[in-house]
Length: 386
Image (cartoon, rainbow, N blue to C red):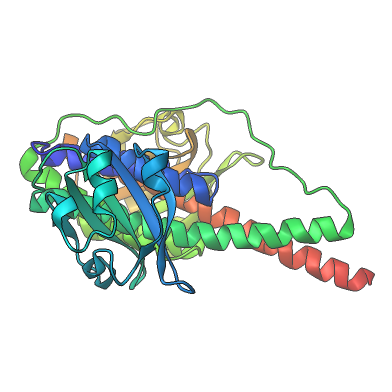
């Protein structure tokens, strides 16, 4: 990956974020972070260690490409093993087996490791662990590569923190059902057509590094909370700021009413919002089939369900993007411009990736809220029964 261009950073960050955020439990989140990072860099191996605050050791929680012998070499003390990383600083060490910061140099030499890149795993403002990447050959990492890997580690840290919260609530709920002797209801999967998450078309290298950085910034923001309403409002506000448009709205599909329910919006009047909910079979329906749709002239396009109200609102063009989570279209992200506007190929690719990450983040936040609400309901119910 030493020669990987910015377009690859953007694509790899999106794909890795998707896999990490789609993980079904904490261990899958940990494994995905390591596996995807090693694959992205095309290196020998990787490992993820989290700090055990009681023992002050770096506990191995996920690894890829390392032998059982190496993994069983012994505990790593956080104060001795490349301690600079725990204050938030990435560290690259060539010929690591000759470095005094390495606790087990002979084991490293026997494993065929020459270079280590160690980056902090951060959740919020706290370092919770380290992501270590191992190269069999002497290797330098560019500033862009270190920025990319650090972004993955930081995103992983936030995902780990969220997964821990969700798993803790889920464990409490499971224990409660066990206590009252009732089988916990399982989630019913809806049978919907599946879609590809994002099609990456060529991107101008002059723009794509900026897109990667923006996607990282937005991902940080939407992972900073498990409040689904806050996540969705943040998304529409970020889109307006990034694209410099009149307004944006996020709608989720209601399978019962077949409406696109408004969840978050900025820049639209109450009169326009009260016109009625768009319907999945009437309002730019190609978006619900997983396609991005640009309407350049709202006054003369039959795909709009409310053309008169749209023009009266001062909206000249609309970009409608599918929100895809776990390969299902769950809603639409719409971007409204006061002028007739075209969007570049790079813009559409970036916004499609943003909508994809947003979709998974929204579903994760809603699942957490559902689990927490179920726990509250059943705790209260059990209290009344006793």
